[in-house]
Length: 183
Image 1 (cartoon, helix red, strand yellow):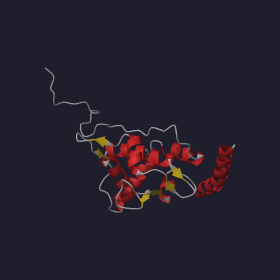
Image 2 (tube, rainbow, N blue to C red):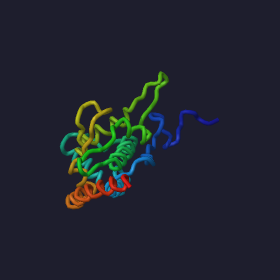
Image 3 (cartoon, helix red, strand yellow):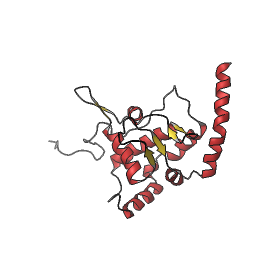
Image 4 (cartoon, rainbow, N blue to C red):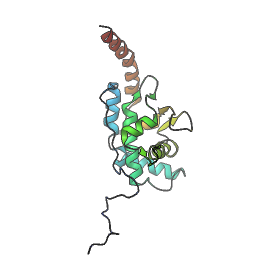
């Protein structure tokens, strides 16, 4: 007779979606720089660079240890969404955390019909307060504006020069897109 209390190591009871992933929407066209940024951020929380950031956070007294696996997966999915919606001109993410939580599979519906984005908020708080990778405009994370910090670009190995070049190309891309839409 099998013991019902034994579980596989990958069967998580804590969350409904233990492996969240950002689903790219078909109706949004990102900046080319955003796609390059996404490629650099792919799997970031499982790489050595993130281990270094965790060690620095421990040294500074912000964390006691590296975030758990479920939190790192949520952080990675949210980071992919933030990179996808990143606007280099304003240095702002063009979606709210609530919208990105739905696209990443981090939102949860209760039996009463209420929506909870606590996993996305926890991941965003960790990215902001523990690591300094993002900055949000308010303490209410559901509707806050999110800005990416230079520290994130440093850990993703994105040089300031490439960010400056992306900002210079953006007005040209906007005017091109506007002209093509008028035709």
